[in-house]
Amino acid sequence: METTSRYLDALISELSHLPGIGHKSASRIAFYLLKATDEEVEQFIKAIRDIKTHITSCSRCGGISDAPVCAICEDPAREHSTICVVEQQKDILAIERTGGYRGLYHVLGGVLAPLDGVGPDDLSIEKLKRRCLDEHISEVIIATNPTMEGDATALYLARILKELGVEVMRIAHGLPVGADLDFADSATIVRSIQSRVKI
Amino acid sequence: METTSRYLDALISELSHLPGIGHKSASRIAFYLLKATDEEVEQFIKAIRDIKTHITSCSRCGGISDAPVCAICEDPAREHSTICVVEQQKDILAIERTGGYRGLYHVLGGVLAPLDGVGPDDLSIEKLKRRCLDEHISEVIIATNPTMEGDATALYLARILKELGVEVMRIAHGLPVGADLDFADSATIVRSIQSRVKI
Image 1 (cartoon, rainbow over the protein chains, first blue to last red):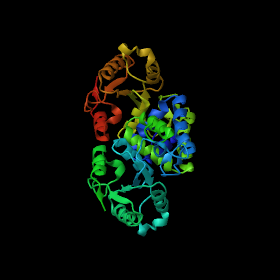
Image 2 (image 1 turned 30 degrees about the vertical axis):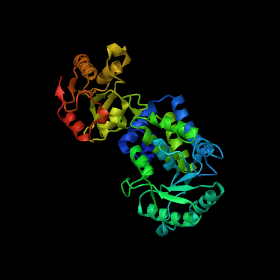
Image 3 (image 1 turned 180 degrees about the vertical axis):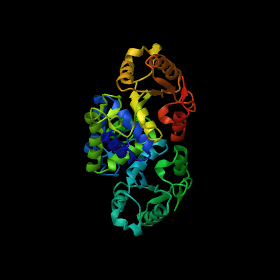
Image 4 (image 1 turned 60 degrees about the vertical axis):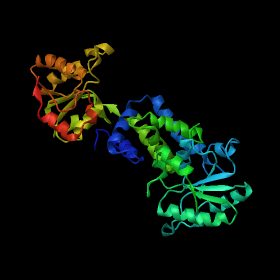
């Protein structure tokens, strides 16, 4: 036993599993929760439960949403002729934070990774093709991460989407290769979108 | 709304209140919890609830405990003639992590702070005096933080405990003044205990 309570030890261990939380941060948070009022803790627990019960995926773009169609897809002020393709739902947040993009999104749900057994059918690619046709999309910006798989997926998508008469763009280099879109700063993300190049 | 879900926004806001968690870390953790299985989330919630329902304060030293008397006070292998006085329960963890101290503890519950209305009766001082007599304590090491209030509290305790015939020591300087014991590295804490000076 590390502290004088096995319950505190258990919570510190749980907190250590969270991304970016080391053992010392976990201890501080555990003590913070120990000292918090019951109401504060119940409010925290309710907030965690709520995301599991109320959040769904947007039936159109696949992003997170409280309703069948998300606020971005429903927003008439966005450019509905442009789709930005991202790997994960959280990548939408990374781009939205910059305020530098006004089109729609499409969540692939990953990248092509033959070695891991992830092929085109495991990603939301057929749906993207249907969207390009049904929603009269003129431009698709591929914002997969600048990793080997992300680049390969971008090339694959470019090939099949061009056949549909869609202009396919790739966000510009500028993100460190091998990095994660979610970690990039806003200025880098905006620049990579503005200076996107045709592939 | 910052994300496309007000429930995710709410959780990110809750997480941002935790110590050491900024807005970006909060987003990452929220997405992590969104992707975690229901079982993982329920286990996490149970760990939080458990600390509120099962943890109490040790009736002897005031440290955190699952039982009426904590594991440190109950441990026959510890030196039961020495008490280390700390401000907060979490300070015990900071010292225990070093493995460099084998005596008992006493949690004051704060420091004397006349400007904030905290006097001797608001701290666990009477109980410390009783412990010194009842438990035949020969040495008290005062490990309040090296802040103005922590030093003043140390001097106050030294004065009243010396009257009981107890040797009163202060952990050595070495911690940056104004810092928090909980943030110090283990080597600094061990050294400050080893080179304690009489006051």
